[in-house]
Length: 341
Ligand code: 2NL
Image 1 (cartoon, rainbow, N blue to C red):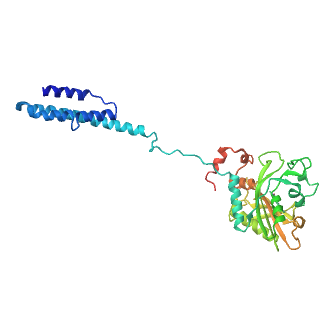
Image 2: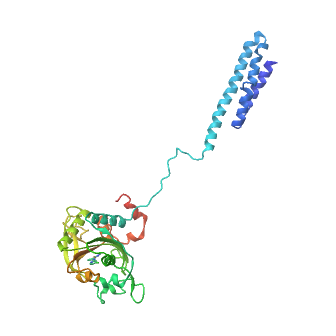
Image 3: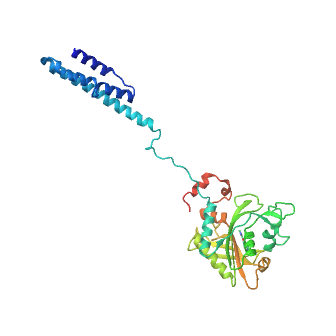
């Protein structure tokens, strides 16, 4: 009778198929629990005839192993699936990277220019991009018949030509001279606008850094030394500077600034067009009329000023041959400056 029962239970165990962790636990309690069927069948040993005790013992062991093995394998299976379904996030997967943008090359060079001038005492001044005639032209000693006052060269915002997009950041320097007393030592970075036909070398908008230093006894020698310091910090210690006489309405005397070619060291190459020199901007001693327009005593104070195109410096520094690239925001161009600083 007990043999029969035990064989029945063995079949039950072998065919049982708990489908989840809960059913498996029921299975365990039913067969392997302290009040389970196996316990009960083991307890029947005393009722078995002595000559069949061994056989019964072996049968019971088979039962026990069968139940335990089934329990073990299914337990492993169910815990694995519960862990998977509990967490839809695979914490072992590599993290998603996300792209932060890169600094625009013009911004990189603007920062570098500001940083160089700040080391020798220049602070940054900024002002509006929409300007009036006084700050863009008149205060800067630009005569009525000057070509810059022509529709062809400047973006005017009204028929009367009273409002315009600034064509240089000297406007900011005028504003500072009108409101602050010397000594004044500033650089004015910013966007300017000119009505030019767009090409590889010209654009209707570009960026400038202009500088201004007003104090007693400021001379052309100070201007030359300041420009030499800038050129060497920007392009390298072996760079030389050269000044060629020029004309601007707001400076007298005026000069174009060249640096010795930092690519070929003056031997001649495509960057300097085989001349050994490259132009980086204009400069001069502030015209006394400009000081007077800003109510600064031109008998007591003198000053120098300079202006450089940031795109021009950037093109030289990174050997970029087309100005239009700066304004197209093509990521294939911009991402090349990822590691620049
Ligand atoms: C250039 C030339 C220059 C100045 C800018 C200036 C400003 C004041 C008074 C006198 Cl308030 N001068 N600025 C002077 C000489 C040249 O820029 O080629 N810029 C890209």
